[in-house]
Length: 346
Ligand code: UD1
Image (cartoon, rainbow, N blue to C red; front, side):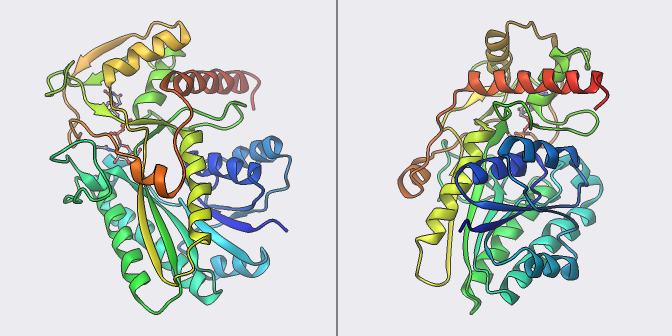
């Protein structure tokens, strides 16, 4: 029988792609989402894509009673992948309490519920934001974490600490924290992808919306950084490659029989690309011309960061198989599919 895996935030961008990969790998995903930053149509599209019924619970992960009901009604939960969190850096600065309440509260409620139901395995969504601007590149998992640049970043750091402390306690708990670099792109079916509400904060959705004529032009946030072309460098990873890392992490946890266990992995490509390189790669991949201008630096931006992924390759037996061009092409296909759906009034 397939193992039930609870995916909190399963209607979100990375969550939905992970649900698709879980189903493809023979797991039975159980989706939980409060739809605060996602849309119920994602569930229908996931059902169409996987050909599976996919149980869906619309509830908030900070609600202990409702969460308990999921564990009671969904059948034995073999493991949890915890995505449910707020993630807008700017909003976290203007409303930090929302971020601390939601991001910390949902993890604590989840861990208590897991303990009550003897569920030990959890994969946690962390972020490369915990490294701040590192002294040396690429960053390994040993690179010291820095003081967070934003309340959002701080919640990721504190959640890692909560998990480490919980693992040191008597509770049977096995945890892998995955530190994501910059996920981009969409599923090849163009049935799921990133659905930013309002004006996108992140680069690639802004690029695809500009190409689609929804935004007038892209503003490059600063070209006076200490990088070869003056623009910031990030490690952009195809979201489907990122999703598969969660499957490997679950398998890795399953292989640990040492009782309490914690480990952390970088999930990136190992390659850094500048904002200008992304614009050029998008134009080459799609044949579009992207209107853009140079603007001032964005407050809180890190100059450059990219991952060393040796540990993930070695211990998770995971590596990326999709190129930057694949990722940008899929992002554009998704944007076009969204436009077509909107035209049909869906
Ligand atoms: C940001 C967060 C990161 C978070 C992630 C989740 C910061 C400092 N980091 O990552 O903690 O985990 O989002 O969504 O906010 N850019 C432009 N023009 C744009 C948009 C972006 O030039 O319109 C540039 C940025 O300056 C940056 C790069 O594109 O150099 C990537 O930006 P973005 O996609 O927002 O990701 P991060 O800032 O790396």
